[in-house]
Amino acid sequence: MKPLVLAVALALSAPVLVLSAAPAQAAEAAAAQASTTKPVPAWVAQSNQYTQILIKAQADFSPEGFSFFGIPGYDDKVTDLNPDVGPRFRAAMVKAKTELQGKLQLERNADVRQDLEILIRAVDNSIEGSELNEKLVLPWFDAPQTVFSGLNALLSDQTPPERRAKGLARLQAYVGQAPGSKPLTQLARERYEERLSNPALLQPTKLEVEQALGNVETYAKGIRKLFAKYQIQGAEPALKAMETQLSEYGQWTRAQVLPKARTDARLPAQLYAYQLKQFGIDVDPQLLIRRAQVEFMETRAAMRQLAPLVAKAKGLQVADPHDYVAVIRALKRDTIANDQLESRYRKIIDAIDPIIRKEKIVDVPQRPMVMRLGSEAESAAQPAPHFLPAPLVGNTGQQGQFVLPIGVPNPAGKALHYDDFNYESAAWTLSAHEGRPGHELQFTAMVERGISLARTMFAFNSVNVEGWALYAEAEMVPYEPLDGQLIALQFRLLRAARAILDPMLNLGLTDRASAGKVLGEQVGFSEAMTKQELDRYMFNMPGQAGSYFYGYSRILELRMETELALGDRFDRLSFNNFLLDQGLLPPALLGKAVRENYVPQRKNAAAK
Image 1: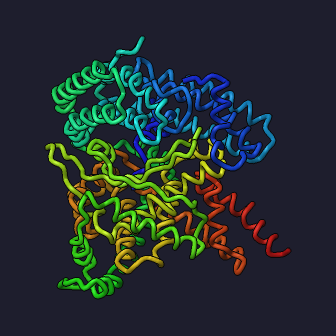
Image 2: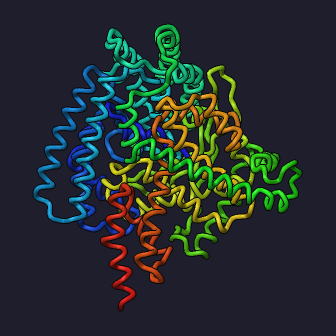
Image 3: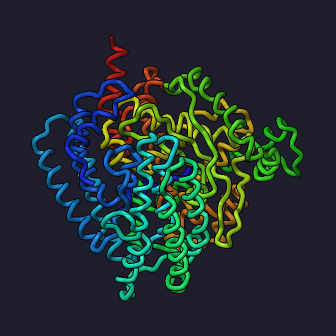
């Protein structure tokens, strides 16, 4: 539901937040991508070699995300917040762009050229974002969340023990106990204070600062639990320093940042436009709102039609069976206890794979997918169901994980608990979105089908990732029970609401209270879900929320175009497999691939 994991988003979209891997490591990384997959085509190997140019240029600044993806050499490194980080980052990007442009001039393979263009575009976007943020925004960081997320990404069951052992070195780098390092909290304070005298720069929002303050202790406890779980020896001095530094950073934030924080969460128009582009939304936000309003109305009407059938089938007692919110609330009474969530979800997950195969929706692996509950600290960092990808490079059989949060901490320290995911009717669409045929299958395909790193790491945006997952939900709806279908429509209604409310809040066309009423009273979500949604729109990831509806719409447009072009020769299974084979190509390039490759191939095959 959220754009995968925070570590991924930081690695791929943060403009000021890479290590130079040795040439041998770079070659090994490109080759290791296929260690558990089919042989890598020659053009993919060449593309991966070029991609190392950009990886080397970026990983010195945000090594945690590249480590998470399996790039060697970064497990003991941490985010660069040293002086002049913005200019240093942009200089590294300019150097990488010059080298990539030189490769593009000499390269003749069309697929490799396309990947080089993806990489160059990623460089341009990174430079633009860095310049905009430096010009407009005061650099305040939620340092405790950065430290937790960086360690949580490394200290994971997905990470081999020899790599987890580097967790101590990373912690020591965070707290200034590694050679040549300073505490991240100290660097974060310095970056904020050195620009504080410029009144034109935008302060952080009061909402995000209060939320960060409420989570400091949760993150510190979560980090200590990670080191205990994986029995990493010798960490006590660094853990004690971490707890002291995070606590002191919280005290400084409360005293120095919170009083100056802004109450108006809107971004400058130029920065919000950049955010939309980064997430893959390439239409005017006013047009996005109008399209989503139509989708909202149509989906709401469909829910009103379906609700009485669900009430009758489930024997629900509601005053008005057409009141879909009342019917959903009645379904929520079948609450699943936390200690039973994994087993009850597993029952649904195990039922989905046979349906996908029988209905020939898309090819799926024979092995089961992984689902687990999030820890308290993970739920604070990622307060929505999400998919945690496995390493894209050097994968030796690790699988991604569908993670279900257990609550949403609020600034007062009291957790708000969801009732939106812990009942069986919701398990169908959430499993389809985060699992199969959604994110889990999408990211598994990237590893197992030998897709280039340019099309996985650097073409990444929310429109192509979340668009596929919402499309996957829709593919499954006809085969789900009626109550599962109703909740699938509820979540589709949410995606339309997101594409309306996110831009309206950021353009000043509505307020938080009014948006909350839509989510609570018309979409039918809990206080916890409503809060994390509003936080997402207003400070966690403004601009991202509309990417689900927009990406889904673009895939539907492309499918209808393809069905018309092929007529009886259209085959859903091959079409969906082809989409997955393209990795994370943005909609325009995906459409080009379908028109120039898939459609002619199907026509030629039918003519033989």
